[in-house]
Amino acid sequence: MKKTTKGSAASALARTRALWARPSAAAPLPVRRAPRDAHPLQLTDVVGHLTLTRGGEVMAWYVAAPVRWSFRSAQDCEALIAAHAARFADLRGRRVHLRVTHRPYGVAQWASDLHASSVGPLPGWEEYLREEQLKVARLPLATKVVYYGVTVGRLTGLGRAAGRLRRGGPAAHLAGLDAEVREVGRIMGGRAWAPPPRAPPRWIG
Image 1 (tube, rainbow, N blue to C red):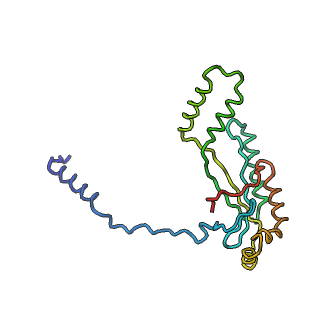
Image 2 (cartoon, rainbow, N blue to C red):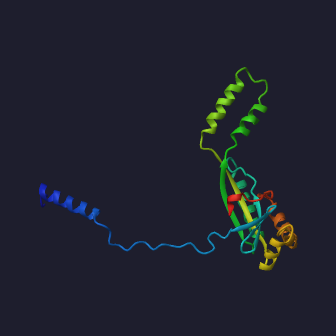
Image 3 (tube, rainbow, N blue to C red):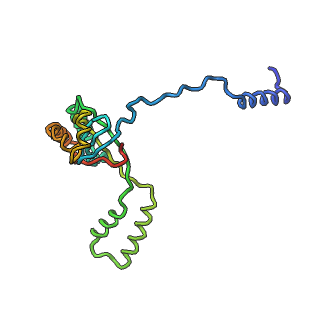
């Protein structure tokens, strides 16, 4: 077996450091540009729970009702998944935009509900609850909110232009989509979802 001298080991270490310090000759990774429709929600108008984009697309927005997942049986979980799949199947042919976001946990409401449900609190309870509320408020707690935006139709360029000029804006031109909005509302109100109509938050576009 060939011995490795102290000098040769130091030389090998120096060569290794030089390789790490040398700029890479490999070609840079190609920059993948986002497709043109990566951010299609350029909202121009909000009428109730309907939004109108710059391209004329009309979407109805719903917020999903919270559903408990923990401590459910496997059968219940599978039934819930199947119910969601059935709702998506009913929406075939329509574009569905899914928005998952978070909002700060309602600490003040939590403290208020806890105080209201406390029967015969002992002296010092309010001070204790105030301190606990401050502790909870410092925790990184958030509530997940899921929005569904479903395409219900499209306004033509003439209709959008007329809506800007006429009194009442685009609301008058959306009346022709009432039947489609009702149908989507029926689907979205089905089992496992039951989300109420909800206007999207201002920052969703």
